[in-house]
Length: 234
Image (cartoon, rainbow, N blue to C red; front, side):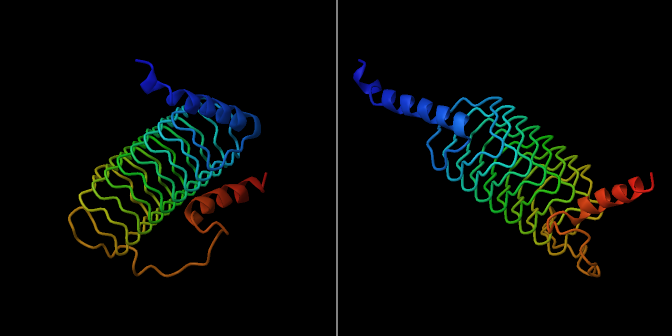
């Protein structure tokens, strides 16, 4: 009766060993951390590129500025995790629970987020260019100043989302929900809209010189620079 379960025991021990290594060194690129328990873990700047973190518990974990490029995070629980400035490019986050997470200025270019839940997430100034976001729950998420150029947002729920200043050029928004979404100053040039039409909004806007060296978030940093100028007078 116990024989079928024997092969799993060494794998479990190996997993625990890798978790210990990660917590001690903040480095485990390419490691198999399937289902690892890392809730509230301090993984600031951790090196986890190409790591398997499928079904891992990362609730409230601090992954600020972490390298998660090409990591497998499908079905992971990342609720309220700190992922600001993290590199999640080409990562698989499909069906992951990322509600309330802080992904400000994170790199999510070409990532897979199909069927993921990003409700109330902070994606301000993040790079989501060419990301796969079909059927993703982005209700009330903050996407202000985000780069969503060429992103697949088919059937995504963006109800109540803040998309002010976002770059949505050539994005696919067919059948997406945009009720009560804030699209102030968003560039929708060439975007396929929910009504199947192609938007021309933003196509004729004259090019302004870059305000900041941050290519993804000139909109956000323009606001920050304005406040800095105000403070200089005090």
